[in-house]
Image (cartoon, rainbow, N blue to C red; front, side):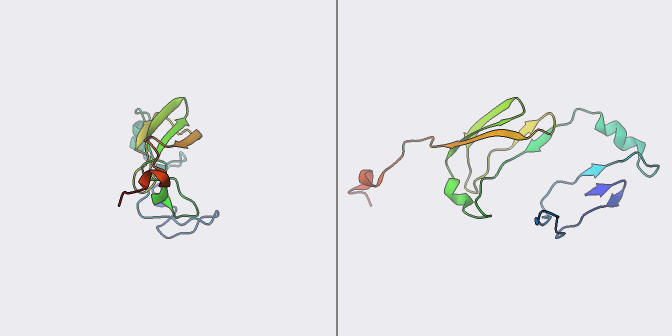
Length: 123
């Protein structure tokens, strides 16, 4: 993360919540209006922003693969997004016009569920 042209956090840094910054996170640039912040960046911020979002379902940082293939429906802002979780338990990527929290999240079976009794005779 870079703020006023200076790095604020580095890969591997621990956050107060206990999370560690990972190298695949997005690059964030911020300004406080100090004389060190460039005017060009302020102009870019007025352009229509789009937020590239994705949600990953996991329990205690593991078991994401258990959710693969399940359907999901989430509400972020006023937008409702529906799809299928991938092999890592992640939603498809989606765009929002502003930073909004996920207010609802449902997981459901999309296809016919096979029960053990349905598997008799199959190998």
